[in-house]
Length: 267
Image (cartoon, rainbow, N blue to C red; front, side, top):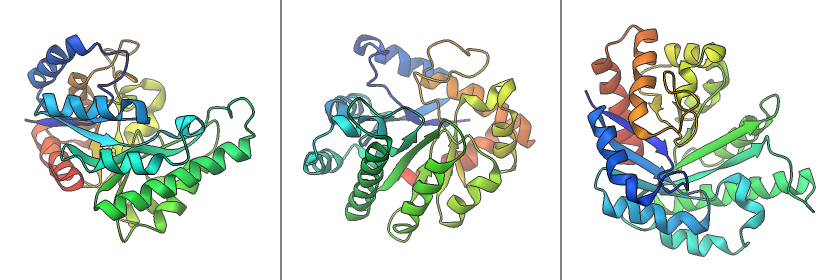
């Protein structure tokens, strides 16, 4: 049984560079043989690429998180393009729309969200240009406006690139437009939380081949480690919960989620 943590942040300040070797070793002990680490701003692009260069089990994605768009120069795309062409970069992201966090000082909500949509569109154009897929973040304080807006942007590029909507918190019905466009969703440790049974329901009924597993570490540690710092090894506990809910063995879940990772990231 092998697993992939399809979305983690090994360049986070919550992980010391000195402990990365042991973090990756623990992941492999839990059957997590591959990890995809994602940049969230220009400042950590090189760090994530360097981690992927150092550890053959790790691959990188390069992008600007929506919560960083206000601190990113409008000419960022040239620098991002250079990073994204590195051979260890397997996708564009983490990008997306975040309507949960308030607009920063001196920005109106409309200005902030408009800039996020502009950046997301630019990321889609870059993904299409480079022949890479794209990793999407959406989050709302209430409702699903960011999800709907992101899907609408994706619709314009669905014939050129494929998107995964990571840390998916909604129903299977909400995922249908993504899947119909050929996209994917992915599940974190939230699927193990008792107060988030709807996420496990979605994972239970999601067709094989349409989803991946992730930690989003260092955040969202699954039960039995909820509240602790998350790490790639804990992908195992999310996989265990989803496999049990789906009536599959871990080996069966591994087989189709690993095939999905292979196809999406090309690794």
